[in-house]
Length: 248
Length: 248
Image (tube, rainbow over all chains, first blue to last red; front, top):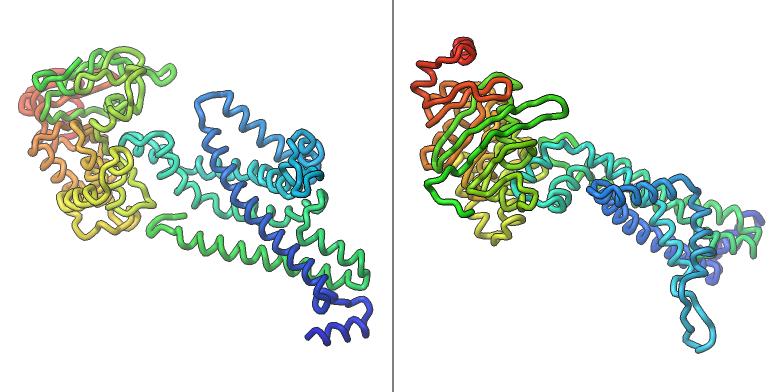
């Protein structure tokens, strides 16, 4: 296998699959892939949580709370995620405390670039998720809320046990779309030097221009597979949540 | 104020209620004693449903007073949850939670709201399912049940909270004549067991049979009321007579 790619690189200089036979480059690809998976998974979880809490706060009695949520949505939805990343890392990053490293003299920010990428991308995707969940919540008939209220449910209980489970089923397709986008948007963390898949890929083809085509091919394939796994999981989940005798 | 059994369990005094400019209730008063069954009849839009929705606080009122077990329902300081533990409500459209099985629908409120032991509640819920003649349907989802069956689950769901008063809001209006009967049989049994019931209904024959007292409402006021025998035979108000002549 390794020999095959070595020979291929020798025969066709533009098709140097270097990470198939060079351990160092292979390590970069794998650690990049792992970082991309971690980044995606964490942002996925946080953005969904932000969406759930945001949608709950949108229904708050206080006009102030609703205005804050609206402001948040408008800011994160209407500005480019790349600019948000840069802003979080370079602007907000300056104000966060630093801690001294293990060696006793280097200083490291409490929130690393990876941390900022997770925060920034979660808020970005979360803004969309709030709107997605709101759409689902609005599709739940008012009569369901009345039924739960007349049984003595509090507003939170009614939200968690009745409204959300029904809303979730309605908004899963839209949520799917947004989460797929989120996985792909993690590549933008490249801009603040988060060592994810794109970052390492670029570093590979900068060192070995002959590996540029194969690495790009690998990038496309990796994201197709990652998104396919996500879609597979979400579809399975959608099917598992199907209620007998109920439309969605 | 503590309530004693010689006082009305539900007391409605000169209640006014408007939706915007539209005055739906124009000074309605009625009293229900413990164990009494009263039926409210009248043409559509006369305020019947609004009136009983005010009794468990689903609608607010502009003026007047409604007390349940001596508690003022529209006291802003009142804990609505406390009220709703005492008042059960069954809706025209059943309003079962479609993502929960029949048994889960019955169990939810006692477990979540009253924090009762799940095992104990399950035993009671199964007994209630048998009581409404739905033994064997415990695991079915609402979408798999007929309208009449769903409505009986809804009744069992309300009963699971051990309410002092049951409100029925045109509970047979969405059913076909055959299934109407199975629901009415269930309600009649409840009435015979001494449950205090307030029914809004168009089932005159049923009202005549089970009600202790009948109220006829039109355009937001109670036009006439009396025990069924006198009400149906000797209605004095021309409006009542006209309504009854069209129905009976």
